[in-house]
Length: 466
Ligand code: GLN
Figure 1 (cartoon, protein in one colour):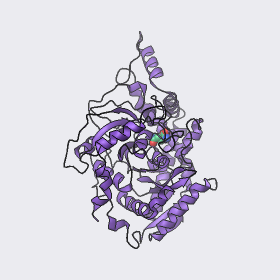
Figure 2 (cartoon, rainbow, N blue to C red; figure 1 turned 180 degrees about the horizontal axis):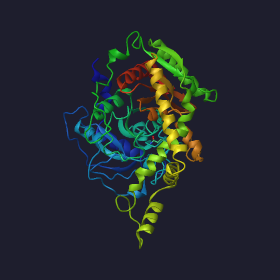
Figure 3 (tube, rainbow, N blue to C red; figure 1 turned 90 degrees about the vertical axis):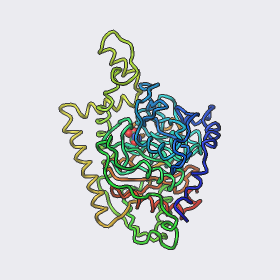
Figure 4 (cartoon, rainbow, N blue to C red; figure 1 turned 30 degrees about the vertical axis):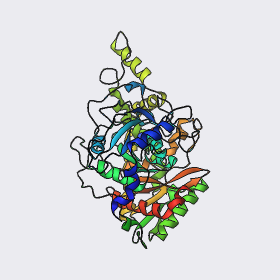
């Protein structure tokens, strides 16, 4: 079978089918609220491209020329970018049709999509539950069948966690693998553009198209992009993963882990063994420091990046007689509660007197976390396998304590801190809701990670939804 045969459903999904699904799921009180803007007139620009005529959806923090880019914030209501994000341009040049912009937590801060200024997104599998965040609109659009490929962004898990909650595939590439040009900055040293797909092959094709060096992003890596879509031969057959060593970090499987999630992970590991992989327990001792480190570094960078929304350079200006009151009113009215909380936290940890105690120490611990991953991979481990999130999708309004919400990212922030690629795929259901399994790989080893994920997907078959 050629590589394209795993993509036939993608190529059969027309723009008309996307609109039919959109009209079914978006509106009404039970509507998903997954989109913030749509473009009914969008057409393919490249009828011969690898994505010719394929509808795609784009998270609303990636700059588009034809539609506004609001980042789910009142601050940027109606803002239309004068330039286009590189990832979006590459999709369009491959023939994709950008049908709309998807709802998100304001400025990508959140894990449930309840922080959007334009209302929460609902999980297509159970509308009383959240889709995860912050790229929840893109995940819901894929899970509801509106599109089969969508772009999201990742700072600490915002593609993988909603992919897990919605029962789809989400990939966070190596830092620098995909250009951040046109991605509205949250925490620049952690931010990545990521891809959602209905299947591993579809997400891989999306990544293959958007990856690669870009002179408009100084942190873009000049590393060649290999073919990422797995061939059927590479994932089926007797022992497609023979020789592969999969590490299982014990810190990601604490005794407190939900027993049903642990059971789904064990079943996935059994499948990996039956595919020929060797499964080996490993240790990443500093894992429990990842959340505190992330919630110092991310707000610190955010407090600096979000300074540009002052009503002069960017942002809806609030009327006032003087400059000081104008700044105050613009920022008080334009930002929601979670964004303000992060700016306060970030400003605090960067302030004179606290910088060494918080920010500098967090940077040192971040380096240790990255080093622990390098050491594990240098010890002969090819990939790591873990749960994506500690719980399945929770109910809207169920998690109100910000710190409890931050713990949703306990298994995902590590890859952003270390800059390594990671992905989530469905490995079963618990109490009716999907569970995600996560692979993590050494920097630039996306192809290896995707091949293992595709082999696991093939082996689990319909079991991935049970
Ligand atoms: N939930 C995390 C946060 O709120 C991660 C968000 C993201 O990856 N954009 O910061």
